[in-house]
Amino acid sequence: MNAASRSILALGALCASAGATNAAPLTFNTALPISQDEWILREQFVSMKNTDDPSPMNRRMKVSGLMTMLGYGVTRDFAVFGVLPYADKRLEVNTGGQDVSRRQAGFGDALFMGRYTAYEDNAIGHTFRIAPFLGIKAPTGNDHASDRFGRLPPMLQPGSGSWGWQGGAVASFQSLDWGADVQLAYQSNGKANGFRAGAVTRLDLSVQRRLWPGTLGEGVPSFLYGGLEANLLRAAKDSLNGVDDPDSGGTTLFLTPTLQYVTRKWVLEVGVQIPVSQRLNGTALGNDYVLTSGFRLNF
Amino acid sequence: MHKFHPRHFAAVLALSIPLLAFGAERAVVDIAVKGMTCPFCAYGLEKNLGKAAEVDHAAASLKDQNVHIVLKPGTQPDIGRYKQLIHDAGFTPGEAKVSKEETK
Image (tube, rainbow over all chains, first blue to last red; front, side, top):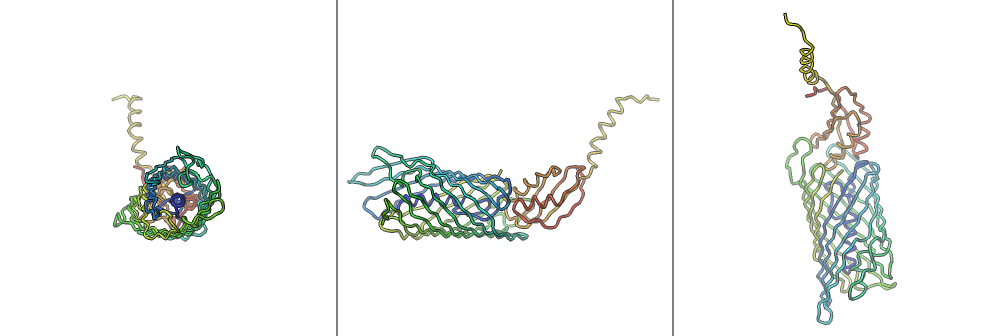
């Protein structure tokens, strides 16, 4: 898996988390509800570092990004989401004994997604839901950016230039004390400029526990949740002009400790994705971490 | 003997209005809510119940797993409508209890 795939994976992961409306996972979706006619704004600041390069090129890639998500409850069971990423990508490579730095910032590809609650079981003090979701990625980002060295490689382009889609299903259990989510998702990427990023299949698990308050008071007190998430991602090889790139794709397992402070109208959240296992093809660039922090507003 | 002046009548009237208001009653409704598990979703529920014109305010309780709906004075509760609004917020309404309370 190269850095381009990595960036796409990370953005995809964040896009998939668009539906979070609760003490929900940081890195993927949830089946918990958005009320009818309710709006949710979610902003996530992402910092990602990839420096684990097995090749002599000593590639180092850093991505800082801002994900803006707007969600709306069309009905009690059907919610729609729009996600627009902005990323600043920097790649440093050692070529001929010299370090070369290339950088590009801009808005990326927008994602539009719908989620439908297919099953729910509500009881006093807990809820269990299953929700399939389907989204389309539109080529809204610039995919022809260049610098003094010429056209930038796909990994540094703000946009992919291609349409894509993602779909899957998520199941969520939430009680007053703890919650758990599991998601299975697939993301397919289209082809543009001869390049196609590998499709991504992922399995995600999350457990959250209320840390504070220890005992519930009257009304609607604010909650502090601690959580642990696991993301197993399998990326197919990228292809260029129909030929697979042997130095791309692979399987990564992330573990993500999270903290969320949840009030009636807003949520603060932070988490760091740590790659505990990376089985990448060829000289694909490994990930160091993905740090995510952000907030959500309910209006 | 003192003569009754219109100014005296106006003063008595002005003083008695707050007393009359203090004694007024209004209906309150408590409805059990199934599936309400966190502060963020409780807000959506309270906001949804505010769509009913006669509702003065609604306050959810996570501990008691219900919502306390306070109506404007002189209005009648519409339980069916409140249950539908709870349903629209993504939850399942349970038993409802109507009572009266004095306005303060």
